[in-house]
Amino acid sequence: MDIQVILTNVKETMKQWFALKSEVPTKTSDLVNDLNFMSTLTDTGWQNIIFDDNFTNINNDKKVRYRRIGKIVHIEGIAKALIDIPLDTADIKIGTISDYYCRPNKNQYSTQYGTGYNTFKLNIEPSGNIYAYRYGITEQTQITAGTVLYCYMTWIVEEEKFMINTKLNIECNIENMNFYETDKKVTFTVTLTDENNNILTDKLISCYKDGQFLNQSSTDDNGQIILIDRDNNYYETDHEFKFVAHDSYGYNESKKYYYVYGVHTIDDNM
Image (cartoon, rainbow, N blue to C red; front, top):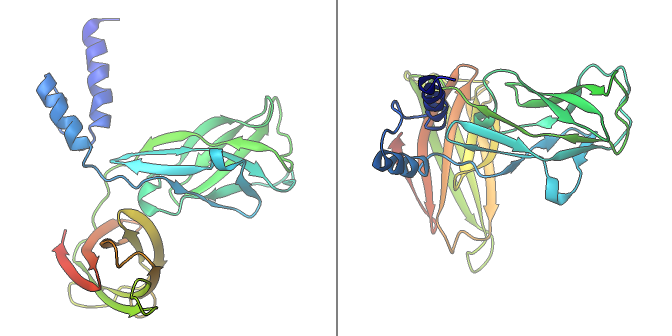
């Protein structure tokens, strides 16, 4: 293969890894700078999938979990069937990726191993649902209780489109749950409106606590979600909450909310 073709392929590969950079490093100093830049990219940390009732982890060492760093998402682990799945089941759902920002923009497919020499097609949808299809060796066979399904895949999340002209209004109530004020209950009421203060219903709002995905809910008829978080560690350390609103077209990064020893402040929109 021509050396120029090889170099071109290497550059294209590096462009995907340096997802937010427009140019590929050409010298050592540039590479070091880019590596430092990558260290600042959003890292969701490892998060466990939500299993369907018919599946669980094979063990604690091989939990099915996922993680996003920058634009790259990786899922790993081994699932185990809890019951015999009827052979004629059309959609065998293993579980769900709950974090909106880790879900692929389009269907992802991969051939995976099962028990023994069996293989199957793993499908992860933009909805976050994880499915298994065509389990078997030379023909489709039944997934029985105890069957293991390997779940290893990596994909790149494409650039999201922003919801424009939206506002998130955040109210917070803090209750001390014991005499020493070390155990606190925090209730957030988050209201989503457009630029004219019209409420926006049926939009998804995700909450991140200290950079980790915490929960998500759809706005009700009042354009609101109510989130209750309880932690006995507030007195010893600061906690940061970030709320993000999104729908099928993308998202709008909200204000960052900081909780500090019972005092809260809100930053400007990002």
